Image 1 (tube, one colour):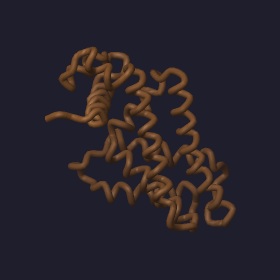
Image 2 (spheres, rainbow, N blue to C red):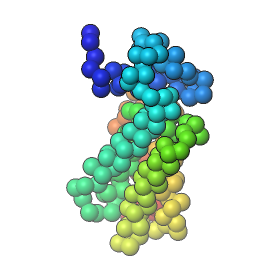
Image 3 (cartoon, rainbow, N blue to C red):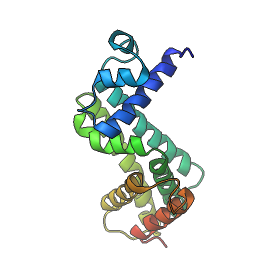
Image 4 (cartoon, rainbow, N blue to C red):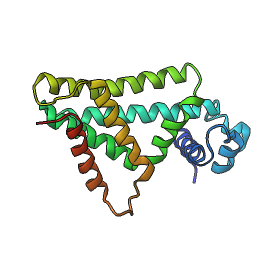
Length: 193
């Protein structure tokens, strides 16, 4: 099978993601990535400029996907409780379905250098701000009671990120059950009523 440039680049990112998850960024070499996709040095470098760029693409893509998922989840309602419930469900569902991306995104931020690190941190701050804005809207509407919207947003985000560590599609709980229960936890964190 002949792959197009973009398909080959996606294959390289997928192989790198698996290796970064299993071995860690520092222990993974470009040769490892090349071997995983059946390519050698010069051919590999036609598709990616460096291991750092591959990591940056993975982490930036993860944050952009989370932001898009969040925006889609809250787009059809203005009601604060429903918006937070839907945002939390999208957050948890993403982490249940994209465990490797979540793992690498949380663990390998330390391996990113500028300007990539700055960009990913900006996207993370924007994502957290989305949750904080939802919580503050609920406080203003009188349906949430919480002392710190920032701490509440951190708690909800951390809760959801943990799903990537333990969730298994073939486990005791279905994805839908976990998503629903975590959305209820989020509403309890903000004392929704």
